Each structure stands twice: as structure tokens, then as C-alpha cells.
Length: 463
Image 1 (cartoon, rainbow, N blue to C red):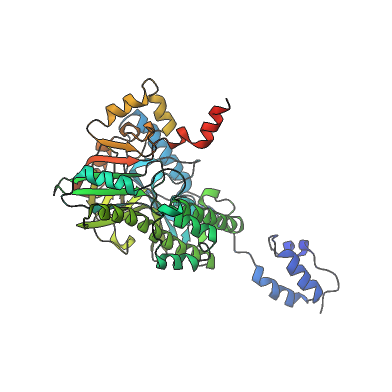
Image 2 (tube, rainbow, N blue to C red):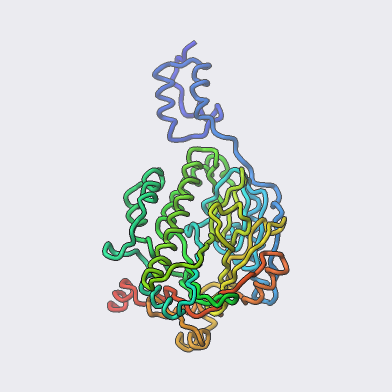
């Protein structure tokens, strides 16, 4: 029997469908063809919404590999654990851990820096953040003079906002370009343009180029630290939009920052593929800087290895979201060629570590020293001194350079947690074994590039 009256949106809602952009097209089809009830229900089945996924009633237990050792750390650890307890109610989560370098970021319920979250069959873009595949790479320069290496690297790298102009861009590998062009989320011209321009750039914040000597061999080592720059940030923005669509449809009670993309969807497969391409781009971003420095000095590398510490790692249907945590387990790194790297601060050695997976570390170690306070708070603690005085005191004996030629006090050693405390807790919680240390000679960072930014100069001129 055919419908004799027009079906309305209220009819569909009464049948259990949630209002959506498909309503007008579906109503037009049903009414134009005067579908009978059975045919209408069969047609509508394609639009049947997935069942709502509720939050866990209780926070899923997680491993705590951190403890407070002073009043400042007590507040920091409390904030981290409070946020984790809220986060662990997210429906997809099955396990988690906190590292000794953990510090809160974002509203309560946001994964902290130094957090590891294990989700089943789901990718949470908010848990890898905009700095996708933030990572470190080491190249062994043999007996080369550290100052010579730092000078050559200074001429090869680029810190601060934006990318390179056409005359100073590094060659974009053909295979990598093809990968971008064959992924729906990466193939737009704006994405490819910034991928070209940002290759061979390191950004700002805590990213660095570090030169030092191996404690074990005496060889000079170059280490870079940075992520995927604008390509990664753009993919992250797209991923968050996709995840938000799913959140509204299947888990509206989940916090926006914890929205996820189901892996077994077309969107999930495409996003996962895009993450691997961005990983390749980031590795290449390290390589072009190391190779340019080697070429400038006419040296061949004695060794090279790298690792991410801000990424999503897959193990069957489990997705390990490391927001600032170093993978120890080789299963997380298909191209593993050496041990892992854990930088602390510019005045401390970069640790070279190995380690085993335990029930409490989930296969991860810290990614650095972390912070106990925000950049702004730290700057307030140094307000009684000039930037130059603080810089001289904290970098004594080191060749520390800021690419912008402006000191960034919030990146000096006192801005970070006590390195000895982090190392002690690494031992206490079985978070990796130090097999060598790269003792600091010097480093390059972006510095306070905003101090003389064009927009700031213009504003100061008009006041």
C-alpha cells in the first residue's frame, strides 16, 4: 500500500532517525515515489544512525609513572592526574599511562603532555595534537669539531614562522609528492605548497638543533627536534573536523578535544594513511637538514637514528596515542635503526636509551624534562633580572644561539623540570635504560621571534 500523505521530518524522527543534511533528499525520494511503509523503511535503513556510545561510568585505571618531589610539582601532578581521570572516561579508551615529564595542557579532560592513551579501533586527533610526529633525529659526525658542525648547521636550518622562499627550498622527493597527491586529505594545492615551503624548517617553541659529544665514543653528534610544521597542523585541523562529525553522531557526551575517527570507516583509513605520509614528510624534514650539514663539511655520517614522541602507533586494533612519550617497543617503529633519544634541556645531555615494555610503561618512556609551570609563569619568576643576565647565568660554557637573535627566557634550563628528578624516576618506574649520553656543546633555537615581528613593529610605531 502506498503512502497517501506526505512524509515529514517529524515522521523520520519518530522512527528513530536523527535530523541531518540527508533529510530533504530522503523525504523527496519517499514522497515522489510514494513508497509504502515496508519500502520506505528499507530505503531509510542506509541512514540509520549508529547507536549512541556512552562515556565509561568510571574512569578506566591507568599507570602513574610520576610523583611530586616538591610543592610546585605537587600542584602539577595533581592537575595531570585530575585531567587523566576525566579523560579515561572516554568510551574508546582501554588503558593509559603518565610519564615523569607530564604536565597539563588545555581544559580538564585533555591528554597531558607526557600521557599515553590506548584506544580500541579509534584515532583521536586531539591526542596527537597539531604537532603531529614531533620527533628527534641523531647523526654521528665522527671526529668533526662541534663548533664547525654547529656553524654549518646554523647555515642550513631555518627557525621561526613561515617557510623557505623558492630560492632556498630543499628538493621535495618525488615519491613523497606522489603520496600527498594520492591522499584525499593531503592532495589540495595549499597543503602541497606549504609542504614544499616548510621542508627544512624547525618552527619555534621547544624545537632545537643540538650539537654535543658522545660520552661513550667522543664523537660529535647533531640532534634535531621538530615536528611536521604546517602540513601536520593542517591535517590535524581536518582530522578534528572529521572527528567532531562522528562525535556529534555517536558520542555527543564525549569532550570535543577527545572526539575520535573510527578506524574501520573510510575516513579512518584515509586519516591513518595521511598520518603515515606526514610521518614520512617529518622524517625527511630532519634528513634534509642533517644531509645539508654533512655535505657542507664534506663528511659522511657514521650513524643515524630517530624516533617520534608525538604520534599514534597501531598494534592490531589498539591505537597508542603518545602525547609527548618516547616509544621503547620496536613494534611501534617499523623503520627502527637504533636506540631512542630523550632530550632534557640545552644544558643537559641528550639521553640515548633502550628499554622493554612493561605493564606500567605500555612500551613508552618520557620524551624530555617537561615543565612545572607555563612559559608566562616562568618569565614572571625571572622578572627581576634582564634576559641577558638570565641567559649568561644559565648557558655558561655553552654555545647557545637564538635564530631570531632574541633571547627566549622560557626555553632556558630553569623553565624545565629538574633533569635529575626525571632521570631518577625513569629508573624507579623502569622507563628505559641510558646507554649513552650526548654531552652538550651548544644549540640553536628560534628565540623570541615575536619581539621584532612585523606586526609588533607596526603596532609600536603607531603608539
